[in-house]
Structure formats: structure tokens, C-alpha cells
Length: 308
Ligand code: CP
Ligand code: NVA
Image (cartoon, rainbow, N blue to C red):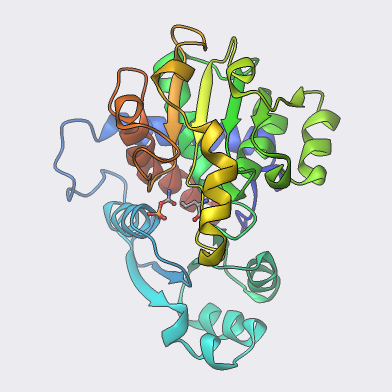
């Protein structure tokens, strides 16, 4: 049994296996209706609990559809509707759920909820996003980059904006997949120093460049994400927008990267804020492939967790 809690807590060989497996499963489904079952039914007879303490479109639907394609069943649970949201401990919730289900995916606020769930569950736990990390997203992103441009190893990735949870997992991927990261954003929103150290200790380059135009020079891949994450106070919205406006990804900025650079965004996006529609809908954008690949990557993650 394996938990999938973070990219940097998972062996590079296992990550690579999951990406390759995801690609194989995607190829095997080409041309088939979305609802068709896979030829293999490795989750037959298995029940997956999907717990959401925050909103979701992609994570919720892709885990649900992916489980069903592999023959399993899901139950989608809202944290606030569970006793978890009314004082039952995470440890007790984990012990109880382990008597009913075969796999738990949780999207939550504080990372400690995820780690405690994993500590006390007898079944695998998957991180579906916390305030601090979003590893499933980066599995889909690496898969997407490699579909379009080949191996991601040695590439220059530029993160524009807030050094948030998705940025953290992109940085964890640098250590495991061997790419370099440049962060461009306001100092107040720099990624955690622990993550900066983690990239450098792994022998990859991590740097901070406050001038977005300089940061993207020679970039192979440019990322943006929302300026106000789900865990951020809405009262900070205007202040964050003012700080982040110079880091908007627009056509002028994209033109300074390599001509074959790709644009990614985990979605949901706020058009004309962190990214313009011209970039989102332009030829370098692979945002909807990323969204699709959440499905395939997470199917591989679930199989790895269950060893099936
Ligand atoms: N990218 C992502 O995790 O999207 P959702 O919030 O819609 O799940
Ligand atoms: N940084 C965003 C990602 C959403 C998928 C958030 O946490 O709201």
C-alpha cells in the first residue's frame, strides 16, 4: 500500500512509472466514449472515498470518472457534511473510513489534515490539494509537457505570480524529474524557502527574478495560477491583484520565451487577470490537455497506491 501525499515524498522511479502508465492507459482508450470501461478492470469491487473541504471541478470529476473507467465505485463526501467538520478527529475518521473503503482522496486546507489521515488510515490516501501542495496537478503537467515536447528533464520552467501550492509542487517536481525553475513574482509571495532549498539540494537550479520579462528569457514552459487561491482571505484580493499585476502572462511576455515554449495553468483561470485570453486560447497553450491528463495521471496514481 502506498500513500500519494507529495511529489518529493515519492521515489522518482515510481513517479516515472506512473507517468508512463498513464500514457499507456490514455493511448488504450483513444477513440472510445468517455464512459466506456477500460479493458482492464483493476478497481472492480473497490470503493473510493473522495473528500472535499474546498470546491473542485477537475479533481472531483477526473477522480470519479477515472475510478469508474477502471471498474470501481466512488462516493463524493463534503467535509462540512461529515462529522469531520463537526468535531470528530481526523484520526478517528481515518480509522472508520478504512473499514468501509479501499482508497481515500482528500482535498483540504491544512496539510496536517492530510498527513494525519494518512497516518491513521489502513488504506492509501491521495493528496487532492492542500493549502501547501497539489501533487496530482504536477503529474498531469509533466505528462502533458512530455506529450508535446518530449522529456522534461533539463528544461527551464518559469512560474509567474504567487508562490502558492501549485508552485510548490512544480518545485518538488524539479527535484524528482530534473528540470530547473525560475520564480518571478513579488517578494511577499515567494515560494517557501524549504522548497527553494529542496530544488537546489537535488542539484537543479532555482532562482528568483523580479523582472518577468527577464525571467522568461529562454523558458521552455511558463506557468500561471490564480492570484487569489481558495485558502487566501478574500479581503486580501485587491492588495494581491496590485502586487501581481506586473506578472500577468500575456502575448508580449510569451514572445520573450523560446518560440516553442508552452503555457500551462492548472485552472480555474481568471481571464485577463493572471493570464490573457489571447494566451489561454493561443497556440502555445496546453491548458485543456493538462485538464484531460488529470484523469489519466490519477488513474495511474490510484493503481500505484493500490498496487493493482
Ligand atoms: N486544477 C484543479 O485542481 O482544479 P479543481 O479545483 O477544479 O479541482
Ligand atoms: N492555487 C489554487 C489552485 C486551484 C486548483 C488554489 O489553491 O485555489
